[in-house]
Length: 501
Image (cartoon, rainbow, N blue to C red; front, side):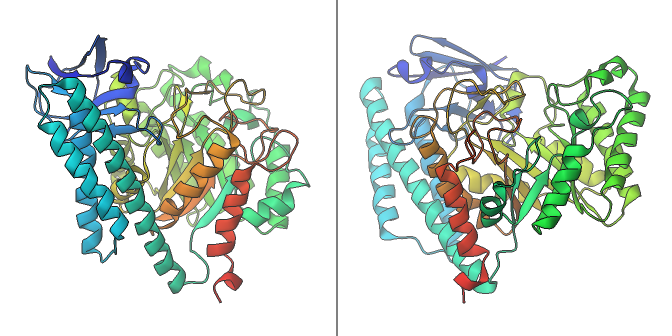
């Protein structure tokens, strides 16, 4: 057993956030170790089977920035506990330093304001590191250092994104990125047309097996047919799927009787994929064949089983139309779900296995759903978003990103999944204003990366059935939330030619 010990002073910094998935260890290669976290007073013990060095990732309160997930540098296992606040400050400073060096090599210009904040972070960290005999004082100084380093990371990311977007805008009047939104499981409302088309040039049509064939052999296409016609009428590029959803309650319930008959499962899945792709042949050219197969949760399927089913689904779709683009959705793309010890493959290993198998995967869609549990992602900084895109770009295939962020907490009458809005993690409590601020900050970071070919919001209106509670851009009464205005602003600035001429 490999144990890593940390002193948390004061203990209240972590005691109100004890869930194991909020704190976990990863290796130098990014692999997440199954981690059990125990907290006893000021001592936090992270237990795992491996004894190699690793990084601790933990949701940590940072004044003015909520409780984002941050990490230490790679630490060796030792008997003497580390002072957690000091190691987190060291980790954030190191991340900023490394990214600054990489972007300066690319020719990025960094403002003087960044250097002032970054210098203050270094100075405070030096004082904290020299004061570790007094854990309370060292932790106070380290937390101040961490706040400065986090502020520097955000400023650096914003500045770099702005420069990259300026470059992309000079190259082309239209940003070559799909900006889209899911229509949800309902008929498009006539009142949507103006606002939806102002904000988006693409639409996700949720052609889902679970909704189309709830009873074996009886297909219900009416909603999707109407959505496809609505998209064609409004000249929106369509993104179909996910055809298969491996999340809990994501597949037809009648399929459970076949969960131990793998050959029959393959046959049923292939038949549906072929049927759906054939129905919209020539109309939908971009398909999301499967979602959340990396985390699973539906049927008694191992990771190898899910890989096989996804590969077979890709082959079935490709047989119908060799020219279509086929993608796979990956949820929790940072891989923190591995900390529970129920998965062997990291999310990028799961996708890489499909890429290497040559089954025709055209891209991957990263689902980043902030503020949801049990299957969402913890809040993370702008720099972490940018670095995530860089990591996934190593696969050499196009990236798409689907985003969700709650505009409220509490019960959502139209939510039809097991997801709930988590405790507050963002700079301010979950609200429409918080959702708008998050979109304003994070959307440009994704737009600035040339590897990202599509950015989608999880769904448009809260009154249609959906998976992510309170994540819509329209309220139940059909009026717009502030976040929609921010998306429209970016659409006009980077996709409409008259703004650049």
